[in-house]
Length: 354
Image (tube, rainbow, N blue to C red; front, top):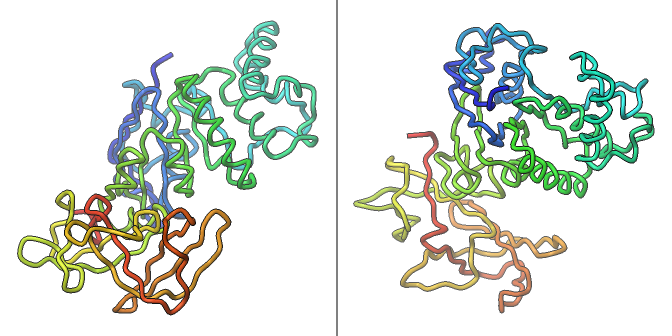
């Protein structure tokens, strides 16, 4: 068994006039957890299906451990797969569902029992081995599907939005369990989601896709803190944008010069200042920080905080969180407000990659 290194080069896939994948190239390192993140129609599931062998690209190369996989059928790729709907067999119990890939490979009965129970123990389902699939909750079915995918120790694990059917609390719990399981098994994992918080929580790296192209490939922190264009910035978190203009040697927001901690990747005449609720401050240093003035529009209670929406000149709007620990009273609608961004939190991006 190889280490699970994946090399994708110049992969194209079209359905009629629609370009699902438009020349994608990327490398996935052995043992890495890589998330394919993007909106519907961005190409992430098509790319996962090409890795799995369910789709054949129009052109390009897919190498796994230096071996070309484009023409290799799915059952000979040594890949584990967890589908969005889990694809479990309802007429089988938990044990037989997990044992199925081992039986296909002709593994002896004693080894099957040992490996199935080991996989079920890994996902905390060993006590329910005799349970029928119809008797399980959504979270339990997800664990069975995961056990079936890892029981034959594949070199690569592929997951297509496996948590999307779960409720919020269970989904967040399973995110952490999957992350711990990956750290323990060290299996190369390719994960598809449209949920940016899920991608940030679980990934070693994230590939942000749009219209069949990889827009940015980087660590979760760099994707969030240093997006390379407006699309990536807008896809990550609660993001608003304020237009800025490049004059002389720097960028200006309205009439004020922006103080930036690092030179933007963007080099165009105009750009966008990224404004996120958690990066705004209620107080700042006028000699060091960037000031944004506006008027309170409305206030929404979020349980752990209030989200305060502020209207700015030019028909723009931003938001800031008020948690009660700021040492500043909650404002009221109609109140004039001054907010602050540190130079480190002030990031400028362009409409497209430079």
